[in-house]
Length: 76
View 1 (spheres, rainbow, N blue to C red):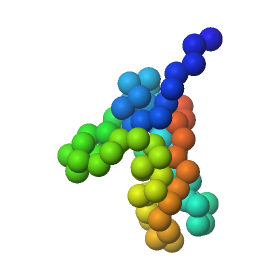
View 2 (view 1 turned 135 degrees about the horizontal axis):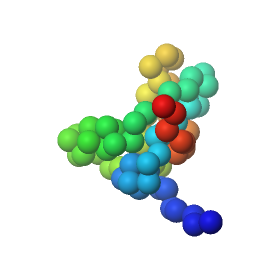
View 3 (view 1 turned 90 degrees about the vertical axis):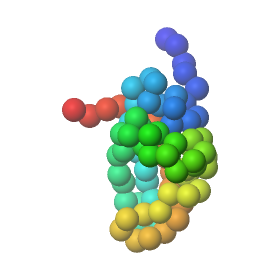
């Protein structure tokens, strides 16, 4: 089995993974398409590393800044 280093949105998109955001404040969970997110972040000139995104992510439910971001399989 091959292990891939998935530490950026680019790598997740290239390997076919979505991203799962879990709010540190309320636990709200959202899945995002990594390819679409990569395009949007590039347009905004934001770093594509998952650690940077974790710090900057804001919850749409409670407004808390900070989330756990992990790669997940694409659910059709």
